[in-house]
Amino acid sequence: MRNDEQYMRLAIEIAKAGIGQTSPNPVVGAVVVKDGEIVGFGAHLKAGEPHAEVHAIRMAGEKAKGSTVYVTLEPCSHYGKTPPCADLLVETGVQRVVIATTDPNPLVAGKGIEKLRSAGIDVKLGVLKEEADELNRVFFHYIATKMPFVTLKYASSLDGKIATTTGESKWITSEAAREDVHRYRAVHDAILVGVNTVIADNPSLTVRLPEGGKNPIRIVLDTHLRTPLDANILNDGQAETWIVVGSEISVEKRKRYEKENVQIISMKKPHIDIDELLRVLGEKRITSLFVEGGSHVHDSFVRAKAVNEIVAYFAPKIIGGKQAPTPIGGIGFAGMADVMQLEIRRVETIGPDIKIVAIPK
Ligand code: NDP
Ligand code: ZN
Image 1 (cartoon, rainbow, N blue to C red):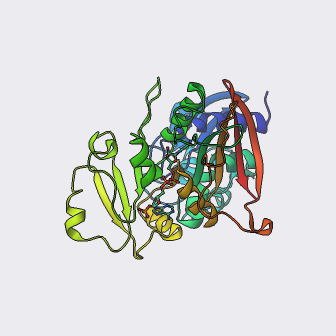
Image 2 (image 1 turned 135 degrees about the horizontal axis):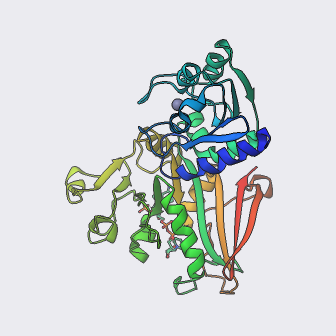
């Protein structure tokens, strides 16, 4: 017979099935155990579809009565698109519920646990809490701030250059590293670049993986609406494109961009303020944002302290040259007291390259 941690670890693995496809909902996994036997399991796979507990209880059928249910997130207690899972667990007659972490959603926050306990169910909280919190860091951040979780990505040479002095940047990192980037794209609600990157590279910003994957919404920071009308992102119909502009763009100019799948989002100020931008994107239900450059845009996010995670790839190449651009351009920080302090979370090798994941302290 396994212990609580082992069953919860399984529930967490199952929850991962939903990564990148449950937005704006969290990912959740559940395992039902009766007399030391796993009789049901399930994951939440898409907003509007059944929660993890519902799938798991259904699979367990009759055996769910008197069972222990392991769930990675506090069962919901409110009527959303589906009836509350806490009620389902009570009605089913489960004996014990083991929960990894509480749901910060003010509609739930402790109320699910309360419901279970007042029905006489034995509730244990906090098993593998850290792993479960990590799993839903995007959702938790969004609930707490109403702004998207921001991941900043760049690929550079070992000497920290993102292009040569002549501007050549294809390709610095290996195909394997680039495939990893596409995997990040597929699990984000939106991907963001500066207008200079659109002009210089004419990227498509889509997901190109052997196994497929959904394309995120493409967002361009373009104060004066300089995005070329023949840009791929405006014409390929692969995903929605949102162009963010300052407050001083004329109606006539905006009209030229009127097209299916293209939206112009106007800021209140003449320039694009990152805080305002993130608030607006949050209102539009963007819970995760993948910022892919260029260096000017990276600098704005870093200086606005609007970065939640950095994913950096380093290729074993030296580009050199004082004028060759680096991942964070713009203004930067003047004093060491002000620089962005990070904590390294993971270091991996991908093909010939190195990947570092870091979070701000
Ligand atoms: P960016 O792509 O960062 O675009 C910067 C422009 O975006 C600004 O000049 C500005 O133009 C507009 N913008 C609007 N609002 C903001 C804001 N709040 N903060 C910053 N910019 C804003 O340009 P860069 O020149 O820095 O980088 C482009 C180069 O980087 C390209 O050559 C590209 O190939 C390379 N690149 C390399 C990558 C890598 O990982 N190796 C990844 C991505 C790009 P305006 O005032 O007109 O609005
Ligand atoms: Zn639920």
